[in-house]
Length: 359
Ligand code: ASP
Image 1 (cartoon, protein in one colour):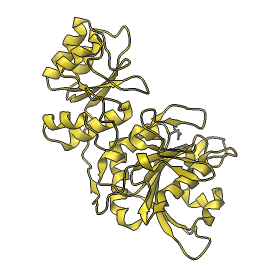
Image 2 (tube, protein in one colour):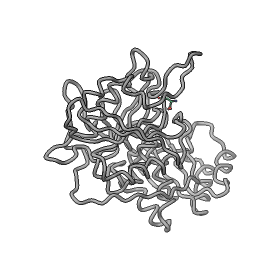
Image 3 (cartoon, protein in one colour):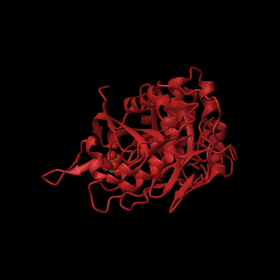
Image 4 (cartoon, rainbow, N blue to C red):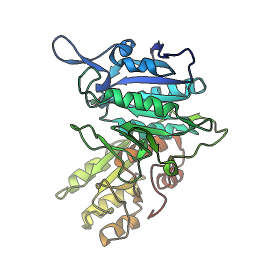
């Protein structure tokens, strides 16, 4: 990949206290209006013109920009490999990492990176904006400045947040617990099943009890094999056998994230259960996640989910769809045995699900 590297001389004083690598992937944050009024990515070298307050930070900032910044709706597996690789390659040289990313698929990318970067003990903070940095009322400046502060925050010489997070609209959320829930207002992200890691106001108020603890001497491992032979299948009243069979007949399909109702419930009609059972017998792995934003799948709570348990559908507990589908791609790419993939799907790998209530 042909990265563009920009070093920004931001330190107002001579003494630089910490360093951050910004990875600019694209998204609304880094866009500006061109002469015709359309939004186009701007040259990140000009960031100091757009955010002069960056100059006051005593942080050495390097920016690596994707050669062609993308709208995050175009993000694919290669982009994830690139982001993870840039962090892996530069891991020892920086205190923390900030990834500027479109909001649309940020929760997917943050989830995937939390799996790919195992042994991570430095902050990787995803952020973006609902309005471009050049817009008067933009949320980009606050999101960027605070993300930089969080990426360099230390307590007793150790990083305060050694995990992959999303910082947006005053809230620091665990990346693989987040969901985009708002496309117009500034509060774009939520983490319904896990508390916020921090909230920023006049201070950044860290909730230390829920942040992954720093582990001394951890070595970063980078996994770059992913397999996208998966689908997300959302149930709706009126779904037909034809739809199910067509999905399960997809050539090469290995995994299905099944979005069920409430606490993991699905139709109890025979045609439905038989189709699922046939798929499981063919070796397709089915993970049950809820269409609800909060709560968890509890297979067996109602008769309508007991059968799923019997058939061999796995419970995703309180995982989000975003974290589930990326986890599936990650495990299918990295594990050789199906038994191991099944075992790991129902266990937390990077804090993406709770241990309690797994059924
Ligand atoms: N479509 C844009 C993107 O995800 C929206 C945004 O940046 O917030 O790249």
